[in-house]
Image 1 (cartoon, each protein chain N blue to C red):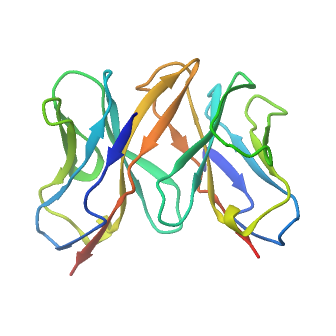
Image 2 (image 1 turned 180 degrees about the horizontal axis):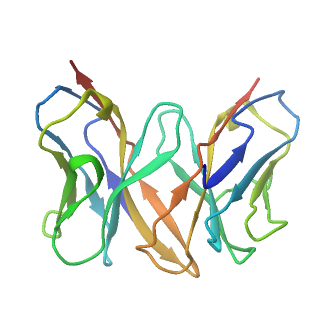
Image 3 (image 1 turned 90 degrees about the vertical axis):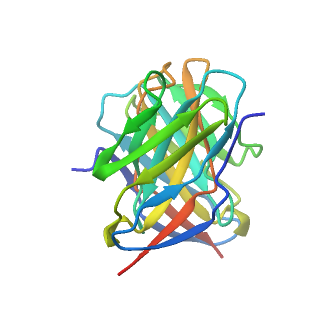
Length: 115
Length: 114
């Protein structure tokens, strides 16, 4: 069965520090992967996506993610976090079902950036 | 301007009652979805529609009924509400049929059943 695992429920970093949020997926087919962010009381916003090509993909606000087929991983990184990055981050596997799709979400990682 | 409008933002309902959650999208997408976010659980896929036809239903209960009156609308009717239905319900849309299509989410309806 398809699944996404985000092993860290909560990550706390200091402002200006680097960040890595981990994500592992389980899927036998070609994975299409996203990272979404959810700010408090808001909907989900797409940070970046991977479906082929260069395993390192760039997203908005300085985020990037690296896909590894051998490790079944899609970790999110940022070189220097800002307090406004505090939010919940979701790793997501995109599947096609018929003429639509379905997203498989991880549980999410809550990022708290301390001043 | 929000591209997907969900109404209401907050909803308190009594156990046993019925409510309708509204979703309209202005992105020209032909696929629309409902997802549910409950405490301590990952966001769960509920339904997908493509060109106003039900494509996939992962909701076990028939108390949840999507309704598509127009191609950019996908409402969610919930009957015989239970406290366990308390969650945030997100509507989303995309272009159909491509796994790398961007999904756009609404800001959600937070439902509390008392």
